[in-house]
Length: 396
Image (cartoon, rainbow, N blue to C red; front, top):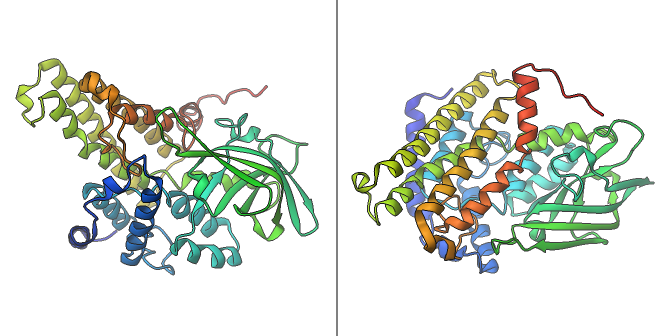
């Protein structure tokens, strides 16, 4: 582990860099009603982070900015969050799901092709969930048939984050239906410009178009785009999903903590005078603040265990479950304190954490964390079976 002094120096370096490079107008440029401006801002900011080495500290050391100890990775995430930098929502799948899957399971040729492309701005999406296979991902039905040197794929994917802007897709398909549903799944890399790919944005009740559905009509994917072994894609998918837990929650929790003062400002009529708030509301705000601090402590323990190689199966599930419940309660309190005005506010910021200034948008958006990265029900099963050692659920 790095010495505290070197971590402090790194934090100081990042703060200085943010002071010189963070665009003051990024929230205006990422307004939800201006998609072209959002895309431009995200690409510009991503290029700056890559150049500084702050976009890829979790990548292997042979890549620019990579190979940093986990303690340094945590410091970078925390300082970017505390500095109010925009989240890399457009490149999240590229930096984590795609990159980590390729690093752990991909071929040398796949890494050589796509990792440099990601650093240059290649955008990835995830083609996992389907209309009948969301929380039960193993029930997917998108079919792939191997014909010579390529697979022919037909089916439908849904809830693909920012899939309408993606260049490449991490795709789960079914290549065999004869055994258990987790078996017979294959993991492929798909060029989104392939013939037969039709991407349609999903208009949400919030007005946002964060997700897309992908229709596949006899799409041809080269066999060289197979990740891992045919019919064993379920194992690869677990690597993909595990890549988003831990450091991502560090960032999101820091952003929530920074936004805690918003609750105080609303409840006190615009200031930060805690004594001006009624005792009942104070108790609720302190309750949220205590839970944020508890989550920070749990995350610190998880990261310390990860650094020491002591992380246990189910640890990340506990934190994911805690965060999803906290984010919902946090935004619900903000919505209630904001009163009628918060119900009418339609402004929101793409790529923000809890800095949107729109409590209704944040509240409705918080429900996605009940499902994203594995539903809460799935996390509870993992905790009960793998952590508490309770009897496994009987399969029908």
